[in-house]
Image (cartoon, rainbow, N blue to C red; front, top):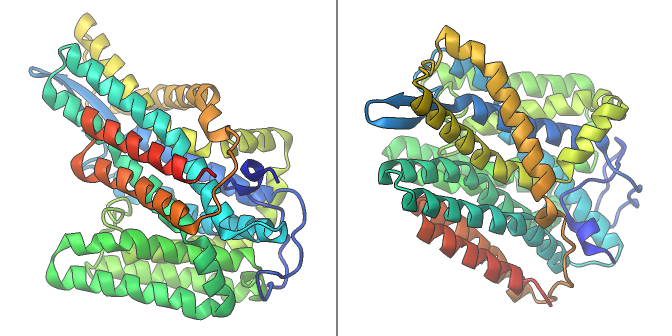
Length: 433
């Protein structure tokens, strides 16, 4: 069995149908669900462009500063209603994880094989990216860059890494939660939803924001569970009117939560920590996806779109992990150019700033694409024979989560980057036979 091919987060072509009642249901057809791949590629592109739009650099009397160009602006909150794609990302992750796990089981694979494949695909590219980030921070410090600027660069690099930890956790629980879904589909998703509700109620009632970080598990796991309903065809058994009402109802509840002041209307702000607002966004996005999926499938078969999807799908984690270093390098180069030439950089949100955004976004997309093309070897590398020990693969997952948590809690520095790489290497060694 080619485990690298079978276990990477890719999808098989599953036409909308009646749901399979259990893991050993109707055999899966060969091929790919290109419509779902199109959605995932779209999510990746949106994340890169959104972060590029938020990346700002100014040069003042104290030198260059890296700033969030969207902070405090009037235009950003409405934009987040269209570009908050993380709920959809986890729904699609549930779809692909469920299909890949079922396909593996039908070929005689085990849950351990599945988990080893996920650890390999997610953490191997992270070793190279985080190692390069640590080396880059060391070079900046050695080159005389101020400690404050080096710290800011490390912070900006580490911000998107929450996704790596959350996605690793969710995918690690696919076998267990898939089994729960087969036994009690409504019970399992409602149980996770209830846990997310309790966390948010406690957070709001106590004012302790730290409690909300428990929803790094419950919110994303609930959305992943929605992907299981999409994968097994249960959503397709509902008529289009019912699905449309569910999606519109979620939007209405979301709007009501904004009016009552329960959640911020800035949907990006609801990421940190994750709130129930993202669950409502995910329900609406899932309903819409189920309605337009046949159209997306037809669109995804157009040659140019299909080629773009194939490029992104094979390099999803590489793109995600490397786009922030690309943006930081662009910001640094822009600051150096401004200081060397005396060129005045436009203030974020000014007319001049908006006029330069097409060039900035195009450059970010081109450089990220080049980085993905050149650096995807780690993500595409063949996985060695995996361990058959549940204990060893559980250790691998925990080591990977610990590495991400270290970077998020302590910040990305030369020391923490080195320690995180060490933990990822330990994880990768534990999954080997």
